[in-house]
Every structure is written in C-alpha cells, then in structure tokens.
Amino acid sequence: MEHFDLLVIGSGPAGRRAAVQGAKLGKSVMVIENRLRLGGVSVHTGTIPSKTLRETVLNLSGWRERGFYGLSYRVKKDIEGKDLGARLRMTLNHEIEVLEHQFARNGVRTFGGMARFLDTNRVCVTAHDGDETVFGFDHAVIAVGTTPYRPPHIPFNDHSVLDSDSLVSEPRVPRSLTVVGAGVIGIEYATIFSALDVPVTIIEPKETILDFIDREIVEEFTHELRQRGMTIRFGAKVEKVEVDEQGWAVSTLADGRRIRTDMLLYAAGRSGATEGLGLENCGIVPSDRGRLKVDPVTFQTNVRNIYAAGDVIGFPSLASTSMEQGRIAALHACGAPMPPAPQFFPYGIYAVPEISTVGLTEQEVRNQGIPYENGIARFRETSRGHIMGLESGMMKMIFSLETRKLLGVHIVGEGATELIHIGQAVLNLGGTLDYFVENAFNYPTLAEAYKIAALDAWNRMPHNVPVANIE
Figure (cartoon, rainbow, N blue to C red):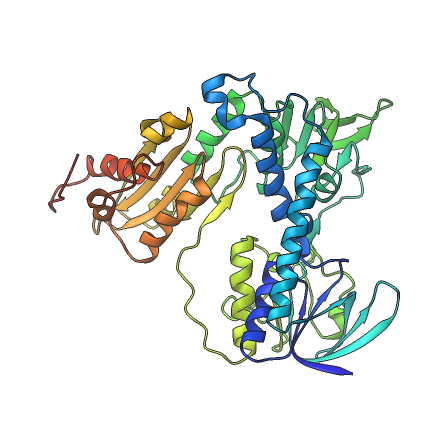
C-alpha cells in the first residue's frame, strides 16, 4: 500500500490548489479524479464551459456591437450547436493540458477512479476498468464539487429537459427556452441564450433573485432583462413538467399557467458529490444535499485529519474562493503558517450583462447602522462607454460618512468582473473616497466610472475635509 502525506479527492479549483500547495511544501501528494481527464466540475461542466459558451455567443451574435449597428446585427447569421461546441472543446483541452503540466512540474501524482474511504487513513480507489487500489494518507482533502439536483418528478431526457451538465455536453440552440431556478447558474444560461435572440422564460418560486447582491443592482439587472424581452415569473412554482408529442417541454405552474418551450433547463440547486465516498467509514455525516460542514478557518471536517474545500462545503461556491480554501486546507494540514484571509472577496456572475460585487451592500450598511452615502456612475457617462456603444451598465459605490472609507462596490454591465478588482484592492487596504477623486485613471476607460461615482457621492457628503482636484 502506497502512503502519501496528502491525498486529494477531486481536481477542480480547490483540489488542484491544495495539491500544488502541498507539493510546494515538500509533501508527497496524490490526486484522485473520477473523471477520465483532470479538471473536475470547473473544467468539464461548470466554470470554464459556461464562460466559454458566453464568450462564444457574444462574439458570434455581435452582441457587443448592437449599440451601434442595431438589434439585427450579427457576426454569423445562423448560429448552431456545433458553433458553440467547437470552442468549448478547444478551451477544455487547453485547460486540461495546463493542469497536467502544473501537476507534472510540481511532482503531484494522479490516479483515475472513484475513491471510497475505508477508515480515517485509507481509501480504496476503483479504477475505470474495475481494479481496486488502496492508498494510505496522513491528511486528506475532499474537493469533489457538486452535481445538479435532479428531482425524480422532472422527466430529464438530456435533450428537451436538461440540467446544466447536459446542456454543455452537447450544446444546441433551442427555438425557445424555459429556465427553472433563478440562481447564479440559471441566470447565466438564461441571459446567454437570450443574447442569441432565443425567447427565454425564467421561473423562480421566490419573489426575489440573487439575494446576496445589492438590491439596486438587481433591480437594474432585471429591468434590462425585461427590456430585451425576457419573461421573468417571480413567485411561481413548477408543479409538473411533461414532454409533449412534439418533444417540447411543458411546464405547469401552481397557479395553473402552462409554459411550452423547445427546451427546459432545470437549474434549481446543486448537491455535494459525496455519494459513494464511504464517509460513514470515517465518521463524517453530510447534509441532506450532500454538503460537508467544516471549520471556517482551517476547513477541517469533524475528523481532524480530513479536510473539505470548494463547492462541496457550500456558499460562496466560487472558483476563486475554492482555490483559496484548498490552499488554506493544505497549509494547515502540512503545519505551515496560514496568512490571514482578506476581509472582502469579489463575487462575479457571468450573466449578460455581468454582475460583480465586493464589500457591503446598502442593506448590510443600513443594518449595521453605519451613516453612509452612495455614488452612482452610468457607463454611458464615460467616453469609453460611448466608444463601445454601451447603453446600459452602472457602478454603485458606498462610503462611510464618518471615515470616508469605501464600504462596498457593486457593478452591473460590460467588464464588471474585471473592473471590480480596483474596488477590491482599495477596500481591503482601507482606502477612502479621496483615492478615487485625487488619482488619475486611464482615459478613455470604463474604470473612469470609479471617479464619476466617487464625485457623485462627494457632492452629497459633508465637506469637512478638503479634497483636491474636484471636477
């Protein structure tokens, strides 16, 4: 039986970062991956495919140029599933090659198969050909990710009724689309297909969406979706889904309404991919959705030498935070010092348009009783926005009235997930409104929105501290 200092189950963002960190600390590391190729959910069915699909759609549809050339403008007239799939395969292969090279140069071993814990220091791995191999370990990191939640009453057939995994495995362009669930995944795919001029209906049982995002940003976002023809049914519960004789999906809502579309994407939640891991053999009990509970600082489970990181532990379920969780878990397991985690991290939603946020929302600021002022900038107010033909997009900044410190940045629009990092840096470094007002930004850029929003807030703030270069 081979024995390793660190055994990692899963090769997604959390698993790969944990493995590489352990190897850089001089430990022997083995990564177990159940898929035929490395990469985990992130590379094969999650982050990379969805963002690649988004970029492909925006390029082929000419979406970014329609502000100038009109709504009928397209780079490619007839966009088909094969157009979307070609770029997906190229990107996936590149990501896997990069990961394989990273593991090779850091001395990380890999093994293909399904891992099952035998006890707190051994796993049995069933390879794809059925052979079983037992590995011993000092510490383990569970980074298996999640799978789409597939309730038994939904007739999935992976053609007209799909989950997010089957959607990207064989992408096609439907004539119409219903999306059940207005979480991050549902919203991303709904807006991506809407950019292809596919009629889209979103069904969400709650009265609100994206509750962790600033309400003003969500209102701006939903207004834009409705303006371009998307139908959003809030407070609507799907009672039944059927496939009719033409193969179309028919959704029956609790209030009796029926929605018939060529394709239905069921995106109402995900479950931790912990089934079959043999967690009962080492004393770990997952939640009813397969999630694992961990120490929020060390990422240890209730079994001290077994850690968990990434989507399998739940919110925020971001590739970026999963990487940090895996790294911190490996540092703790290897007895290395752990740097303090930053207070704020950015959240990105790759919808069309993008949403990105960092820091406190206006609701959170109010709840904490902090006197504050907002500043708003519209992308169309920037010269770069005019050049790009942007008609929408906004940035909202929140500042403390007492300290002038930046409290939060919230963006919806083109490039939001890139722009947010300026606000992230200033926020984590304790910067104030004065930074944005007194510093020069490249011109013309969308980043100028930071100065515009800061000046908008300054105009309504008490002027008890002089500020230079006010425009």
